[in-house]
Length: 258
Ligand code: HXC
Image 1 (cartoon, rainbow, N blue to C red):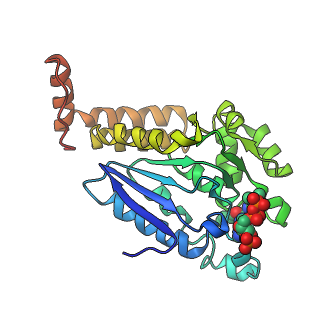
Image 2: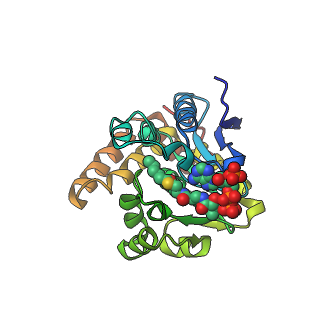
């Protein structure tokens, strides 16, 4: 499929998606979100891909939903779900890990998109924020829900109510991002992390993702039980036999994703 608002490429076993509306700081319009959903779905079902990276430009991961496109919508336009939010949950349906590699602005829907990814690697230039309040609206793609889970209620309230931006160092201290690297090392770091993940057994990778995500949806006792069942099920895979045999035989494992 030919995309106009994103660029996709395959780097080894990593699917790379670059948001590409540079004149609008990668503002997220419906076309971009449709294309992002399609690209994610294609990489997710491609057996040659083990991990996905979403990135933007040096200046912006994404400066939010497209304000110009949104400005004219009525309540019923958005409530019917045909615009803005229609494809935003697609990213949560992806079974393989998705890393956000963030440089520059990740604001509003851009911050929410980054938070829908499984983890965020940030350049020192990254700036995160939920400035929707300045537009007379509010976060609409999980900002008020994922941000407090990631950075605490206090910081989420602060960011969403004052619209201030948080730099990469503060975001790392708060737990929003997993690593901060110099801007010129961002893609190298993100692609290396993705390659490491893609070299592991895909059943383990997918089960770990599913299990960690379950931690946000359930009680500790239920979550531990869910984890235990998945752990048991790894013993039905060839990769568990191979991984443990390789350790015992002091050699590298050759996983078959089976
Ligand atoms: C549409 C945008 C945009 C956006 C920037 N642009 N952000 N267009 N939607 N979210 C456009 C500008 O209009 C401008 O176009 C060009 O990108 C460059 O932006 P500048 O403002 O000139 O750049 P700069 O001075 O460097 O300021 C950068 C910025 C600022 C601080 C990021 O652009 C900004 O505040 N943007 C809006 C951020 C925001 O409010 N995001 C939340 C959106 S609401 P021209 O044509 O003039 O050159 C949202 C709701 C999510 O995300 C709901 C999800 C369901």
